[in-house]
Image (cartoon, rainbow, N blue to C red; front, top):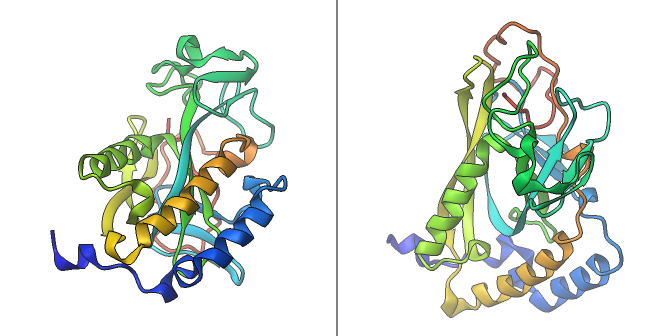
Length: 266
């Protein structure tokens, strides 16, 4: 392990490290009074396979190719629309824990036919290889300079990469909430020739025990985990870009064309 991996990020990078008591008190005051996680600023992936993120900030939307920060908490969720997914109506069924669906059809997600691979509907109306009920990861991601995290909905095409990354941290005995994680996007193509972007997660740094960083972020993680538990999975999790029936042309790298929320490429 390189020497950098044992260095605590400077306090100026994370206000939580400058004055933990004040930041945690502000979190307790605001996140325990019916705060809606869905009101947090968002991190989204670009449409059409564009390898840029869309990050909401106080000064407007930014479109970086790389984001660094700390995963504070995460949970599994599911969202399902009858037929082909559409962004102009609420999902027919959602699950806030990935196990129990609420809506139509609702019930046990493990036994639901729409959660099985091969149940998705392609652009032409035929069966696809994916799941009709899409599994996501709701992630609270704290970027440098911020006291509250962004909400990142990891799309189905990136959940495997997310799970593998968090498991690799576990094997290193590094709690995910004490790791500085870098995210980039890799352009991919589905089996129906639809372009999409997959999130790549990499360990960039970790908080050193000796400086107290892990303990501070452990307390922050516990608060964020409690705040995330009741978070709703709704239509804002997924807004599907409407595509023509023919394979889409490669998306430009420039952020100038209008972008929509995380895509489902199958």
